[in-house]
Image (tube, rainbow, N blue to C red; front, side, top):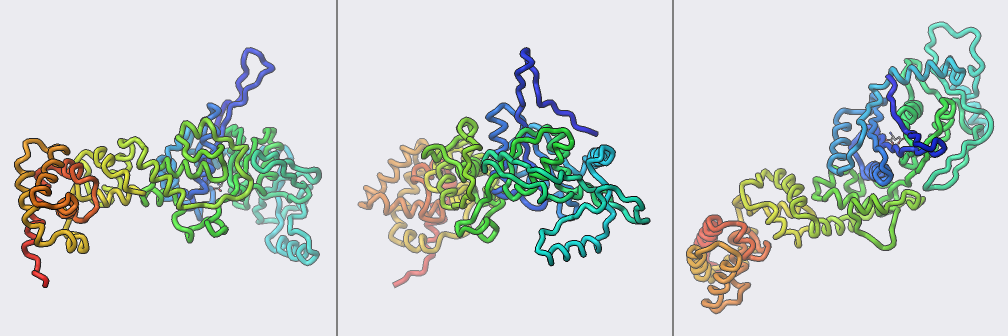
Amino acid sequence: MALIFFTIAYVSNPKIIFVTIRTRFAPSPTGYLHVGGARTALFSWLYARQHGGTFILRIEDTDLERSTAESVDAILQGMTWLGLEYDEGPFFQTQRFPRYQEVIRQMLKDGQAYHCYCSKERLEILRTEQMARKEKPRYNGKCRQGVANPPAGVMPVVRFKNPHDGVVVVEDIIRGRVVFQNSELDDLIIARGDGSPTYNFTVVVDDMDMNISHVIRGDDHLNNTPRQMNMLKALGFTPPVYAHVPMILGPDGARLSKRHGAVSVMQYRDDGYLPEALLNYLVRLGWSHGDQEIFSIDEMIKLFDVTQVHSSAAAFNPEKLLWLNQHYIKDGDPKHVAHHLSHHLGKLGIDPSQGPDLIEVVKAQRERAKTLAEMAINSAFFYRNFDSYDAKDAATHLKPEVEKPLTQLRESLAALPRWEAPTIHDAVSGVAEAQGLKLGKIAQPLRVAVAGRAISPPIDVTLTLLGRDKTLERLDAALEHIRIQPVTA
Ligand code: GLU
């Protein structure tokens, strides 16, 4: 079943041809979506979006041993969380085997491919001899002209007839012109003995059928590109434009990997990052626009220029990502931040509907959290009682001498006609004054009483959000705590 896509639109003047931009992200589902993959997905998505094009998701799952359903889920989840919505797909290569077989049959018929019966042993000997002569190991084309007497019982592989002469020129929009000699490329296996198609071949058929105009992918695929271009040309398809994105390095200059910390997109979500912070970080990794650091999605679409991506590898800087995250927590739409915060509260077993309006909590907390995971921990006390006080804060602030002012405060809070920040503020400062205490001397014990520790938003905001009943309940518990403390000399 061939997929039918339209890429070329003829308008009234037939000489003008508009090529529709079609990009794709084509992950192999052999693990989670990592930041390198997310970056190429973002670049492809931006390219499609800025040209009114189409962004396609294709799951390259032909490696049956390494591909897993969990990885597919993780990739789809990662794309959704990042907001990189795709216009077509996800297409699964494993569902396209009949189409690959069809193209293989056609190529055999047209003489662009041939059956090769060479045994593993023969290829191994060939390889050893070539290595001994210090030549690059490659298939020597023994079966290329046809095999008069095919050996019985051998399931042949199918090889592509790569041109012998000339060059393949990749006009890469990031790396510039890269030239490959055809004499360096041997006849690639496109179908194994069991008939299953190989990786480079399925990419070719898909890029052709899906009418891909721009392939933006990691530069670890650059060596596959001349082979894929030769096959595309043999199939009568003009190869797409290629952009090979350099890899991401860890802060130590080695290829970014798990040992540098989180590399999975969903790990960043779990660590309390906002998707726009990660996207903003990734767009700036190896690309710049003057000295601008903050890019909204709309600005990325408007300003990102894939041709200006640096051709050298970029180093990952977790500090900068954290800085961006803090920025988006602080300046983002509180409703949006609240939506993401609720995930983290959920992980703590908290149902945010059982307490103050989460948007108001975000507004109160956003100045003092670098991650949403941290904000969730800091906000838990609004939604559930805590089991114990921070030991150090309780020792410092819940001392016998605050029993009297806290008791007086409890009464005055209980008697407030309205539970609002200004009236609460007046009550706290009124008691401080009456007791001859500085505001902090009563606000800090009050904070430990209601929040369990000496960190919380401004005390009037904290109490407003917490509500009168819980405030009084916790003040009672704190007074009890003070009373039962062993008296220390
Ligand atoms: N499936 C390949 C990968 O995950 C990508 C191939 C491509 O983009 O052409 O690395």
